[in-house]
Image (tube, rainbow, N blue to C red; front, side):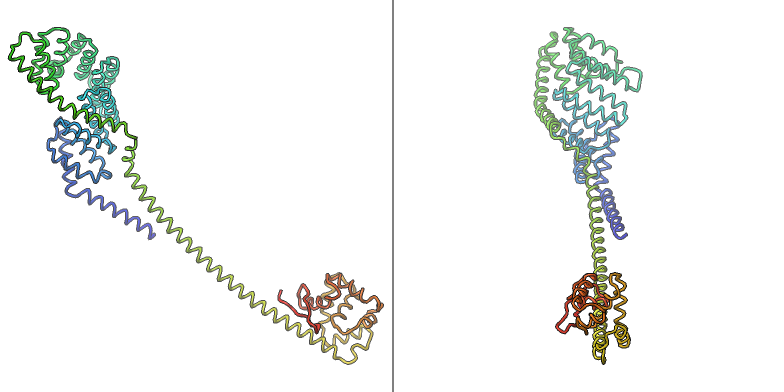
Length: 508
């Protein structure tokens, strides 16, 4: 329980630090800036406070792992502002940074890819623009934003139109028409069709698609530029000049103005010399400006290509917060397991001490029991030797040759000798005479002649008879008396004797 309380306390502390960080004043200002930029984006406007956007990015950069969605939005808005300010390479850096946060806000990612693709389109790299526009369409599809998804498909088709691939443009625009919220054909779709057929060299068909647009959409500078180019290439100079002048009147876009001025300087024979000279000078200025920006555009596209060609390790940034959380969990689990392991080792050591104490206690009890048994054996041995000595000192104990006399004599001295007889009978291997022979050997007071007389056996064969009896008991004649002593003492094996024929008993 103590460990669990510590883990809960640690988690609450981390949560408190996070909340305190998220609620500090700079982060609060950064979120206010992002909210204002979001509201302006909904109306089609751009947040033009570059200092506030840069401050927002730098404020959220240290917290990008915890606040990755806010950081991605900040990078997108700042990159979009830089792109609108014609600072393309710097804009691409921040757009790529928004891309690498791997935010789960698909609309932000879709807008980020759209701005990247637009830079590629300005630079003239239409295949790369097509690929990035396709990524934008995927993100808007995941966000279930049908309007932006349709616009992304149209932009993808526009990149194909710049390459003159009318078949692929037709397929994409059909998908865009199916994704449209209205039954009417979008002016963007018609403009893209017109651009594709113009690039493919089918100028009448391009003009035909523009003719299907409503007057408001057809009056935009980009549509009028398409018409001016188509009429110029069809050698209808009056119409080409008219639309080129309309483009100059309606827009200040350098690319559109440069193309319109080119048409005027090349295809308006009725223009005054001074007007042509001014148009040529303005076009030269625009082309110079475009050339200056072309290097920046090329560098921006190069940054994008390097990022796309780099090893695909950036996806791990999205998993970095999860990896940190897993690492912390693994650390907590490791600490917990180590404590459990240490507790288990302490328990094992405690159980081992208890077991050692029990073993020592039993060994002490065993040693005490052995001492008691040894003392008891010594006591019995002393008693046996004393009884034998008492019997040997009895008067006339070797004079009578009858067994009954010796039996009575032994009974009078001590009944312990006939306890030996009971032990021998229990072996069930000896007969009566062999049992009596063993008692006479145990008494150790008779020679072979006397034993033969008492047992009614020939004196010459008493040794063989004694050896035969010892063999039945599992010993030999030399150790027979020692075996009998062990039998009386309750031992199982015979020991050696000293010179006085008294048995030496050893602990078993």
